[in-house]
Image 1 (tube, rainbow, N blue to C red):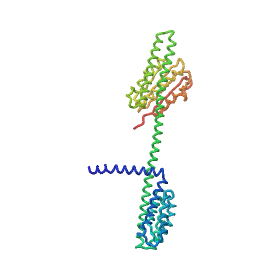
Image 2: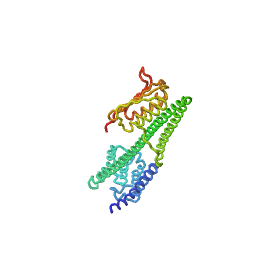
Image 3: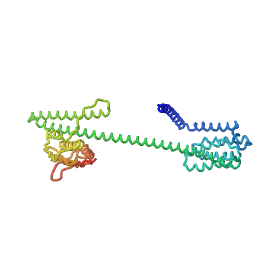
Length: 417
């Protein structure tokens, strides 16, 4: 319990410090010159207080230096800090002569420690090799001070300075590493966001294509059946009113089925856009067990169809839907383009491990229509469905001397998991 209380007390303080730190950095990014003026003014004031207050006399090796020299050295060691972030090497070179004079005269001003701020910015913003000559530039005046105004052994002056330089450089390198790591994470987050948007766009495009295929299959097939029934009913109206009535009844049934399928598709789309709405009425997608109903509808529209089946069907729902839609599209195209007196034949061969072959042929002479070519949605839709399972689809005129059209679908075996 004590440990938990300690954590509860520390976390808000840490968050408070982080929030203040973010605000300071944000202010610094917006007003860099103003921040530099304030910080430089602070160190200039500290150097002048050291001069006017006589604090420099407590560490001086020679107290007989004139006041104007001490004032000049104090300003020379502090004012250049204004450019420490943008030109740290130039600032260190500008301060070096004042540090050397301070050591030569024995003034030994504490303001020379401001060079450590410049070392920090060199480690933060410049290549690491710059730290070597910076260290040599800073330790040279200390060596001069130890030689001209000795106070104990030389290492008493040089070692603390070297340790201070190492600490300043280590802090700069640590901050730089953390900054680079943060920037890398932010860049990765941006790239992931872009990739996520691209994936969303690709998914939306694929969904639009899927919806277009479904609507094409539903509307195209049912309208073709209705057109065939209407033509047959019109022909039979004068000779057989009963056949005409049957055709009208079949038109009504087919129309209601088409409207029902479209309504369910639109309900699913509405559910995806509004996930909090009540669940729409959902029905399974067509399977191979629905082929008889499909073929009966085509026969009622005036197209004789024969079927030949080899093997026993044992396909997953996705493959069944692909075979169903390809057969549906092929029969729809026959109704639309094959011409009068046409017959159609369907041959299905079920093989092992989910492989299947479906061939739809007709004896029409109406020539290829828009959906037989690459300009419509029929053939591209069939190819897209087939490609999902690594299959092949061939569609074209039957070889001479046969006439009509042939659609051949082959789905290979399912890959082993």
